[in-house]
Length: 226
Image 1 (cartoon, rainbow, N blue to C red):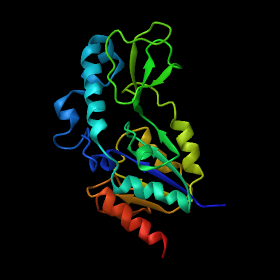
Image 2: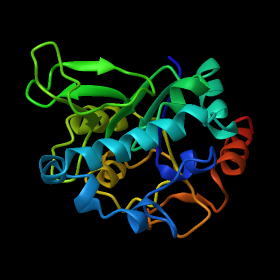
Image 3: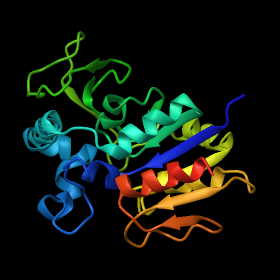
Image 4: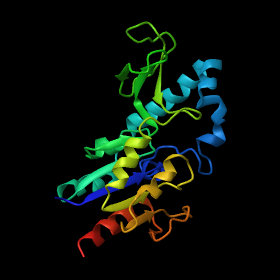
């Protein structure tokens, strides 16, 4: 049985593909209030603004490419069982070759019905406009977990983390809950590595590689062969 590597990823890995992050200096939250573009109340109040915000994110994603960190994680599947649990809503992990990805916060390339949440559609990088409806006539919205909404795949992700033989954390400050709590689901004897050039939240017993995603993942992958 191959060892199971579970990888938790955040905005830092997407940033190296040129995608705007939310929390960094100059990030999206400095340009837009979370209360204006990322809550159910915001969508009810001004759906045009919210749709435009995510349409812009989709337009940016259309030109972004997976970076070496995405590709290195995908290549691990040749030797290990790999599950990527990501806070990112882009599809760069899949485009980089990863075959088992759990999107905690939803997927930018999907839309869902505002009234029938089980109706989810692949839309790629196409915009969602007012008047675009599901097959039952309800307005479509981004398939994104907004602030104040439940994270439906959280328990699925927690179950995956509990089966990890190694836990790798890339490009996340571990400050966004409940996703950040996943690190506490890992067994006590499982090695944990955190790759982040900044000051990630303290994870007891973790090895920390203070480098960007691509450089740090390359260093970590090389260490697996030792």
